[in-house]
Length: 130
Image (cartoon, rainbow, N blue to C red; front, side, top):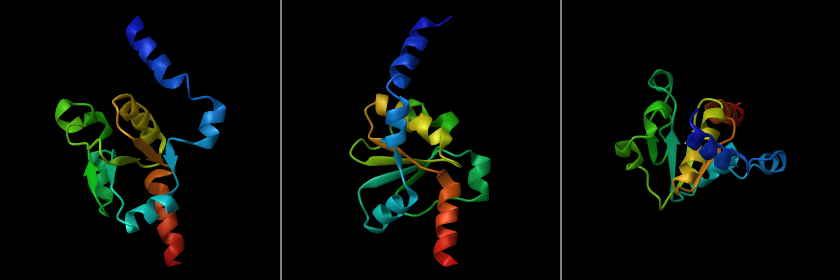
């Protein structure tokens, strides 16, 4: 058993109590995200969906990096991230984005997960055009 890894995971996830998660300090609502994009704030959208998911639909508005979750944590890909920008992490439903946001925070990045992910963006945009 890898006790060092267990200790790292404990440090990562022990602060995530029910109260903390209800406040959702690591998530951003779609409406806030879209508003920030429209204001051209200094943010980076990190789309961590798989290549197959990206083949179906890509997010292309603003400063976007498409790096699949399974290839993100290499020196080459982490070097593409800018510590001077807040990183909005996007996946299909938001679940993977929360995990990645946590790990990026441990590396010193300011990151938040898009609540609801691509599904929430599609619903938001559909409601706006209906």
